[in-house]
Image (cartoon, rainbow, N blue to C red):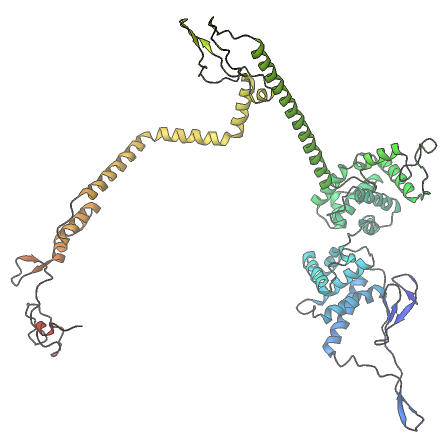
Length: 574
């Protein structure tokens, strides 16, 4: 049976349970229509009638009418999109997309989502599987919705159908698939010359790793723009943007990226000639061990049909066997690695040279000290030779008055000026280098210096105010010290008065009212005496209104409660 996916007559496999007819090579369902004759009865050997044929399991019992209506509606939506976008394939592409839609319905994916969105996502998966030249933005443009909304539905559908890791979804979309459609849309007709040039430009972009991480529409737009201009068509970037559905900034960026490649510096004639040579090389299938370079009559085969010299030159120029340069990230990492290795090698060499110079300098100093007799020895036969000193150590000096030798070493500050050390000399700057370093440091720390200058100017301007502030602080500190050194108050009233003075609230407080808080009046209301909490309480008269102390409470009547003297409760534990 003919398989549209394999595009050939292939052996088939029948499913005995569901009577599906599948391709034996790719597994595509070629026939899913289950037909069977009506039941018949035959008499057996015993004379009894028996049912002939097989009993088919009913699939209608598990599906409701609404389920079938949803399935049919999805098929009609897919058919309408295929007809509107002129997708080639006819019923084959419709059936493929409808199978994905049926699986989505079985997974309850259509709940809460529009049928048109799900149908478009299923059709896009079918187009990618069949390598149709359609992008997701084409379907969103037809449905008049945002491409991000449709893209979200597509990604969720891939997760539900377990297609997220499938090679059909993971594989990069080849921009070459869209060149002919975009060319026809731009020119209004088919032009094979423009399409072929654009295809060669896209192939060059792929060799230079421009396809990775970029949308195919941007690459197609840049290739189509260059091809159209090279063939004499006067189209602007706005015309290309309207065809490929990318913004003008993206198109300009792709053109700049192509300009930075090796092919971007060639003329159109040189570019086409180079592309023809690469096509010719790919078509040749040489024999194993055959030399195809210009030295085929002089040199032996080394690798890939080249001699050793040509192979090394090819690897140096191309950067690999794919005919393109290495990825930008790899190029940056390789460059950093080579620079680090070079710096490490130079540092090691400089350290070794400095170490050798230090050793030679110290050896020469030791030899000089050993061979040269010391000048500070006086004609005393018992005098001993001082110990050998290395460079930088002071030697014994004579007594200025000539009273004998002074073997004590000079205890002045050490000086590095007489050290002949290449490594130390590298750290010491002369006046010119010091001035340059100062200029560099001031430029790097310009903001910090400006802030410090502003703070200094502000401090100078507020010098007088600063003195006043410090005096205020001294007064406050002295006031606090006076409060700490003051004697404790004898009465609560005195403590309150001291607190009010310390808080400077005396002018806002009524002193008489404060004194009344801590004093009680006698019966005449003249003299006040301090409250004594040790006094005995008087006995209640029992009328519920007047107490013996003279206080009158006409609003309360206790009606005999609390009769008896306070002394009656003496000795009672509460």
